[in-house]
Length: 259
Ligand SMILES: [Zn+2]
Ligand SMILES: [Zn+2]
Image (cartoon, rainbow, N blue to C red):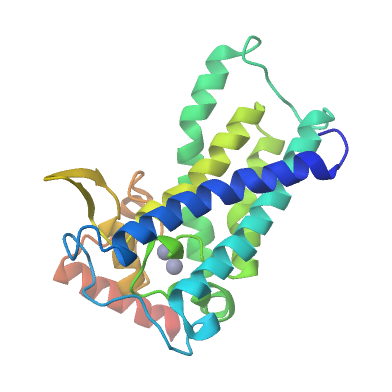
């Protein structure tokens, strides 16, 4: 990775594309094509949108596939090329497992928190009326969300969203940290946008798939900018718990923001 060569660069692209296609595609197939659990725990009774000019190609699923695999995976891949190349050349601080085992584990645990903090602020910025209109609106075309909607973002939003990886240019990291960070950043939105609250396996609820928290963001917009794991929204006063009172508060905030 010390020089830019097609072999490893192509493999990094595959490392991003293959899990994304398998997980988002698999979940979409099971929940929306095969209708594996019918309407059970589905947030919105409507089906995903077809033949609607709001979406690229007039089709929500094709729109989402293009913005995810075309735009998001390209930006994520290019950023990772830069980081691995800088690490291989010793331009940035790196660690080894034997040299710093404690830091290795601690940093791994902190990566999701860093990702959550970074996302909260980037996402709030994107709700600035100007940025929203030209950039973030591409993601919010999806009022009724599906697994493909997770990182279905405009080019500029992807350029901003994936800057989270550049922390590895500053904080001493191992390549496995970058790999974990990328997987977490690229796969967790697939799950939080599944459109279902729970995944059913047999007669039991197997996993919490979608997240009511982010579903509310797609419905009411000016609330729940972060992720449900770390309560930044509670701390910064933008939390919506699904109650009527929270809806009133969110609408008042939105009004004040756009006037
Ligand atoms: Zn979203
Ligand atoms: Zn948003």
